[in-house]
Length: 276
Image (cartoon, rainbow, N blue to C red; front, side, top):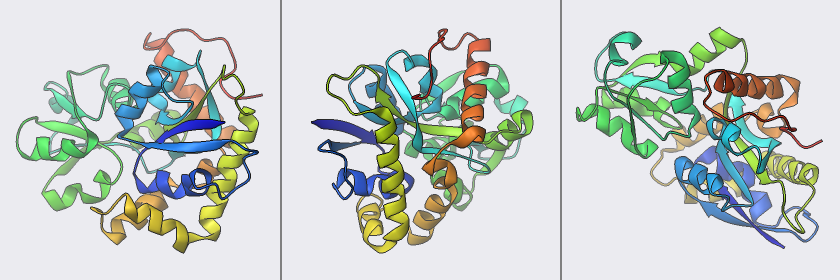
């Protein structure tokens, strides 16, 4: 059986999922066909139920829990790695919140954290890689950046308004849930979700054991990034939480969902979030 597996071309995804999509680990006859796209495009595909397995924003998770499991492995969660709210000149968050803010999509965790931090702003959604240019050109006064943007915004003469990840950590004490792997719940003939979690861990471990081989695949999909940015990206977003959430990671996810529900941003859900 072939399952479509959506993930982004960003280094933290391609390094983790190389072994899985290349058939380098035993998946009991299941094959995983890669579908690479922008994070918000993946969110929309998952929202429409188009993918059997997908990387998606934790900001989306609460909207699709009736249809997808949240898997404990393969995601992006950590400390000091959150979205950055940036502008062309220094200013207080309250000042910039009065004007439209560029962001990478309404389903992204970046936009959710901006909403939680401000109580809601007028947003201007766009592909994440376009946000910095929109700010620099004056199209918008400020924007929220993700991925490698946090390593390069200073080179463009931009400044940080606020680190939304640090805000989350201060207000919750929890690591920042950024992106998760989701598997369709009712998949005829589909794999046991706990086995998929194990295969994701094995793919992660393969990357650690064979960095030279895996990095060739990473570079194929990140040719516009310098070697230094690629390594910084992987070092920041690929960590022990990627291997497995653990109790601390699961608690962070539940806290994010609770805050969304408190603001009526997602529907009620009484089922299990993670596979039993």
